[in-house]
Amino acid sequence: MSTRVALVGVNGHGRWHLDNIARLAATGSVTLAAACDLAPVQADSGRILDALDAPLFTSYEKLLDATQPAVVVLVTPPATHLPLATQAMAAGADVLVEKPATVRLDELDTLIETAGRLGRLCQIGFQSSGSYAPERIAETFAAGTLGPLRQVYAAGAWSRPPAYFRRAPWAGRRFLNGAAVGDGALANPFAHALMNCLRIAGVTGEAVAGFETELYHANDIESDDTSSVRLRRDGLTVNLAVTLAADRLVEPYLVAAGEHGALRWQYTTDELWLDRDGTAIQDGTAIRVDLPPARDLLPDLLDARASGREPLCPPRHCRAFTALSERLLDGPEPAPIGASHLTGTDPVTVAGVTDLVVRAAAAGELFSEAGATWA
Ligand SMILES: NC(=O)c1ccc[n+]([C@@H]2O[C@H](COP(=O)([O-])OP(=O)(O)OC[C@H]3O[C@@H](n4cnc5c(N)ncnc54)[C@H](O)[C@@H]3O)[C@@H](O)[C@H]2O)c1
Image (cartoon, rainbow, N blue to C red; front, side, top):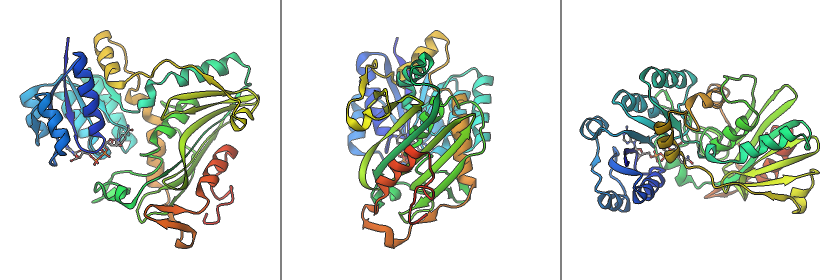
């Protein structure tokens, strides 16, 4: 049976979802009942909507009233997720909400409570939740050959042009018109790295505290684009170092390190490598671990609806992530990296930042401890 799905937020990352829904529609598993965007949609997206015979609304309320979708996919700015998801669930739909679920922890808890009270399912779009890598990593550490898990870390060095931070009013902002919007390197572009680290470390459902953070911005923005964070607990260090002002690109990766070896997961390509002695990844002799294809979160939500199980990434799994991103929002403002450290302006690049990010992450250090001259 084909499930009637509505897409809300068609531009930006909504285009990925539109293509995905079109792919699933071709298999007969979904029908795009309607789409909604407050802004005019790009011409090629409009053509896909026409081909799918899906009406485009500018009013979300009218979409819900007129089309009564079974599932709503929300790809709108983070600050809108709670009110839009609540409306969808009150109208009888289950929801796939893009990450981050909400900006603040009390909003997330309201989302959890509302879904429970209305008996609706909610999937949060942390797409690496569909990967089998976390299960393989847990199984490998349970087998004991790598010794106890000591550190989970992630590093990533991307480059984003100034236009990226101008693409939407909330981009590069912590607050907009007095409301928290919470865009920042760790809370948004590298959100998957953070979520994956917390998941591998077994920290998902609790509102953990005690993070150490160092946030910087090289771009002319309010939020952070070059960020390090660390959480230490029970003999385990969880830390990340990332930048959007890379002088050399490094796709984000996560390492789960034990006393006698490590696993490295490049979550954007879903590749997992086993390093039995701690040097094989650098030597190029690491062993590739076979993974089944990752599960897509929309079919997973449809399957959860049919079978009565929980989807792969329910909002309760996002409590630690949201507690940390709220801490980033309410903590000290990101500090500027001075112009003398920059080697480019479009895109902005920080001299030596990629080597620093890689080194700090592996050493479990914050930027100032890893010798950043601007920290
Ligand atoms: N999972 C991923 O890898 C990934 C990647 C990029 C973005 N995202 C997430 O997707 C969401 C959207 O991000 P984006 O960069 O596409 O944002 P964006 O601001 O570029 O686009 C959002 C779209 O939603 C529309 N919109 C806003 N409010 C609306 C409303 N009330 N009703 C209908 N339409 C509305 C806007 O007009 C815009 O077209 C965010 O939560 C972001 O974090 C996820």
